[in-house]
Amino acid sequence: MNTVIYPNPTSKLLYIESEEDIEEISIYDLMGKEINRQTPEKSSLNYQLNLSELLIPKGIYFIKIHSNNASSTQKIILE
Image 1: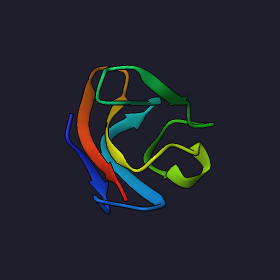
Image 2: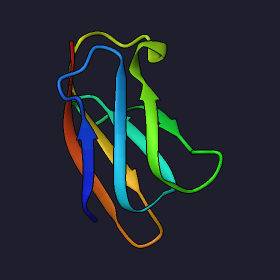
Image 3: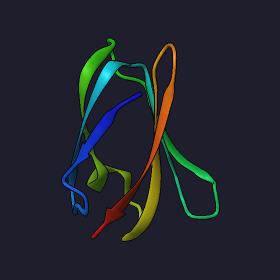
Image 4: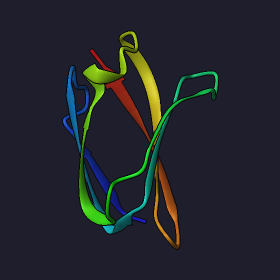
């Protein structure tokens, strides 16, 4: 699954563009602990995630984007 996430690094908003409908987004810390999970109201190829609402500290995280047929995991940097 080809997914584009930008801007990275970011301090607030993260935009996600996918070839397949985004059904769920999970964010993990470096230890692999899930710290947030979001399900878009309707499946879409684009999603906007406001990281400042999550009240997580600055650092490196992993974001996993799920679709019907595949998933994609990428590293994100929160400044």
